Length: 491
Image (cartoon, rainbow, N blue to C red; front, side, top):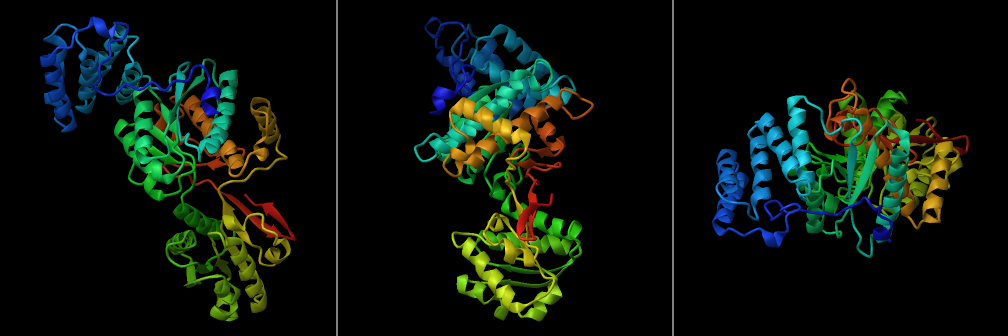
């Protein structure tokens, strides 16, 4: 399992903010001074209340007014954090540099380096992306019984990207060190996992897997100013309103908007009909955001309708007469749920009965690789999908062989959705490592992982496209169509 495959350099160390930590000094040799701990606790209370000036005074009292005690290093770190929160970046940098010299074996070293890198970013000094430094890559994924196989598949993909980086793919001296934390597939476990990685000094975190755990984990990442990239979470609430939380999987809303842009800008369509399942489904969300974006771009939506089930889709031609379909020119027909393949078949059959020449059908990833090549080709069915692997590409073949050598099986031999997770883990990790490597050149992007991701060019992965374009939700999708009885990639 995963724990056995983690590299020797990985760690799950976690120092609680404000806890006792004395570096190389034995805990038993250092006294617990009750009065000093009370002063320290009052400093924590002031810090949490946002009174950083008072917090700094109390932490300094805890440091300077007593001999070495069990809160000395915690107070030193918190004093530097208070300076940073006050905008005194030069003093914070000096304090943290002194901390690193005086307590080199402290479990707070990672946190100190991370806060110092933030201070230096503000000062315009070298940032966390300095050449030759190690990227601390945090991984926050679940190891419970239900999700362990998924995590293993993604971790194995990440490990392949790290192996390439440590093998010299990027600038000399660029190395990556993985740190793993189990999210336990719970909101609380996810919060604790990201908090642990923050304190251990992670520069960026991959995970958690799903929206339910990514949302609370993102709150911790935002507070810690720790860049977090969720590989699969599709709920737009995961990153909405947050600066340090990125979604590598385009949200459902983003997919609808991007399909509208592609239809208008690349397919040159400007009149649309929209048909979806009822409110509360992914189909409805896709349709609503497609419609809004199409209208925002100046297109005309001639009709918008919802169909309640399979039977209604089979009678689509009765609900929407041929003349209305003809006036639209293109109809967006996203489907979702367990019945999606049957809805696709029913809709195509109904359109055949409508006999509308030159009608184009637009869809979502549920239209991918269905046994409908001939009927779909009649309507030039064009759809957007967030994941696509071309096994003929040399890069894909190399990955498959490396994956087999490392794990004893190919991604295609993994139980669904393990194949997708293996490729996604590789692509997300490689994108992050590449963005970090580019950030060593200040002429290209600002220092810091967040800024590096915002400025990164589009990444063309093995199975995933990543394109943030200054935002926190990936806009990269694959666009495919059925034509002449076969499926082809358009862009």
